[in-house]
Length: 332
Image (tube, rainbow, N blue to C red; front, side, top):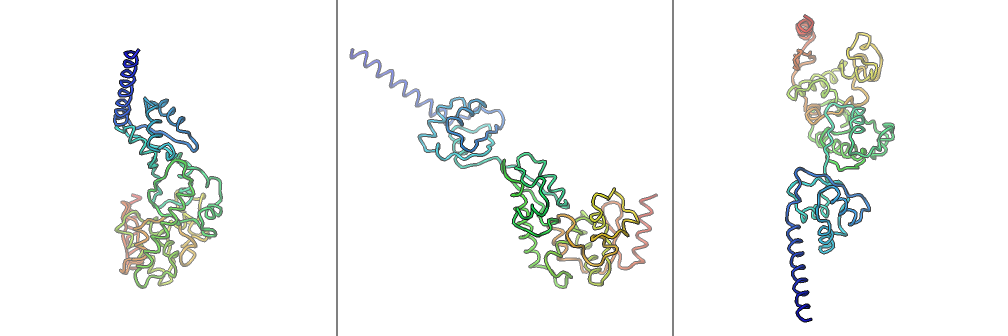
């Protein structure tokens, strides 16, 4: 009998030892993934459900050790919900640490310089990870949702890449972009050049949006801003095509016609003096800086060469020659 008991004790000791070694080995052995795996912990998921789903997706082969470790080190009560990207060489120990730390998968959302508010909403509506709260809302309601009631949305959002987690509301992206634009604009305004013809930071934002749409070249933006600020100071019409196009809205078919330049909209700077009532797009930092640090030369006109650059002229006679030269070349 004693011999039998001894055998049982030895067998149990051997089993415990084997289980302990298997547990330790499983903790620090890579999960065996051949490529990154994606796993989501939903709100309210129990540890048992998480372990079972990890096994079902082939991420964890021994879910009992996942559960055991979570109970032993207290992780079971601290797992954060969200979507995770699990690298191939991740161990079980590292996986639990990832879940506890809440290192959820980050998605980039890029707002592009020169986009209009409508283009921003279209892009957000087509981005799967976001929760769609702004969809079908009016601009007025959207601005209320982001905490800026009564403000016109155009140009108010800073173009950048924002990282979000799955399920982030689209209005949260707008809030972040709005706050960043405010911060950038206020910083640039506080360091503005002397003598610029704006009364408020918002007026400089309007100018920056025009500069953004007039040229894609960073080196030309101060020159373009210089032309328009000098025109404002002299009481000249801005006569900038992008504002006309913006005012036409859906009626613009790709070509500006003579009648378009005569059509009276709040944004037609060929017939209305001063700045348009709002920005016409989302300006980037270069355009904002240029609007607040315009070139101090004497040019009052510019015309496109057709290769992305422009010719700047100090008087109408020079400008007409440049127009004739480059417009003729373009149509030959």
